Amino acid sequence: MSVRVSVAAALVAAAAWNSASVGQVASQTKALDFDVFKSKVEPIFLEKREGHVRCYVCHSENNNAFHLEQLSPGATFWNEEQSRKNFASVSGLVMSNDPAASRLLIHPLAPEAGGDLFHSGGRQFESQNDPDWKILAQWAGALKN
Image 1 (cartoon, rainbow, N blue to C red):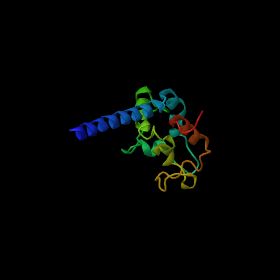
Image 2: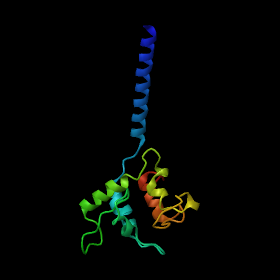
Image 3: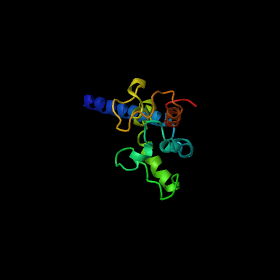
Image 4: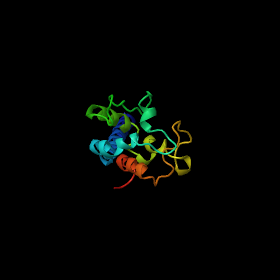
């Protein structure tokens, strides 16, 4: 009987420690800021880079993890509802427990700079010193402001 009680107590203690750890991690992660996303991050997706198409061109036509809403006819930027949908999509590419490893930062980055080996849209960022890459990294929480 005492072995069962000891095992049960150990399981309860482990569960309590685990939930405390998860709570600590959750409290340490910074919430992503929609206003910063809309004013600083979204414009990057519309920017034309030499030798590349805009992120928007491919990512508004696809149905993968990084999907951007199509602009309304005649519009040059997303409306509030579209921006909120973009925010939800792009936020899903950020690893709150390890922002530097987020797909948003790694996938479009050149392999020589720590990025993925393949991105069908080419290397949007040749280095982590690219000003736009730094904006993405700051928003995701991988760089200190």
